Image (cartoon, rainbow, N blue to C red):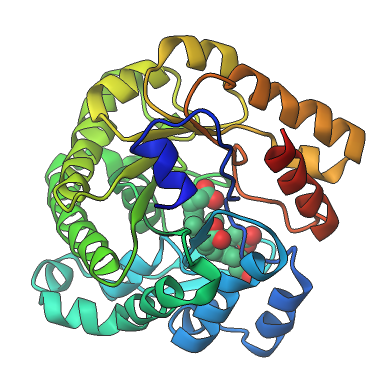
Length: 333
Ligand code: CP3
């Protein structure tokens, strides 16, 4: 059993597994090398040899306890024939969505389009570098996918709110998104993903009164679907105000917290295993500060099942040596 599963399934508190959100990425020179020659990010995600190699890069360097497949939550709209590109220093840009065409899309066509991702998961899960480690598959949560599909860019710059008044469209899209997210989860599990993480990066944008409709109900459906394969599911509802209410409503196996959350309060309020929290900016400081800040989480969760991780993705400016230090601090605790 992987250390992640020891924590998730057996509720162990004596080990400290660690993996890092966006662990395969731009802070690694060996990633930048491949990326330089592969300017089309989507094509890179769909190159099973390169995407599996990139996925394993951090595991070759650091004693991490899980591989997370090098892909993106926006592969879902891509699979629904909505174009996705990445503009430098701006982020993702999506094209127009043909709702009727997407509604009539055949599941086999979606699978065929995304098949290299599933093949990459297969390669990664069988690699000697993931022996006794978890292979994490992931999806974006329905709300966050809906935001990107309608807004066609990150809501960080601008959220086109008028779309969200068209309730029939929203219901149609949420149904469509849920159907294909389930398929995407199933294919990842069939190919060797033994844990699923659901990223809800924009959960914090939803009004309290709309949480059931946009967040709790659609996410619960995915959580139940994943659990039906006997695969644990980690939820990361970034920016949500009431993590306890989220856990009671959605019932994930693990709750991943963002860096604005007080770990002490979470530890007291929540019974299920917790993941993450450390501010990625701490990795841009120095060793002593890294030790101090990471020890806060390790101290708080000393007697609580806990998976070490950050409160959001690792920043591209991070020095790989700081990641090495962090892994050592966590493992030596
Ligand atoms: O964690 C990992 O190592 C696995 C790979 C992974 C990526 N994206 C690779 C990636 C995962 C799990 C994601 C999830 C993802 N993608 C989320 C949810 C988590 C979060 O960050 O909130 C979101 C919102 C996206 C959408 C997305 N993809 C954005 C906003 C961007 C642009 C960011 C930027 O820095 O320009 C991406 C691109 C992306 N996805 C990169 C990587 C490594 C950068 C691509 C590059 O090299 O330019």
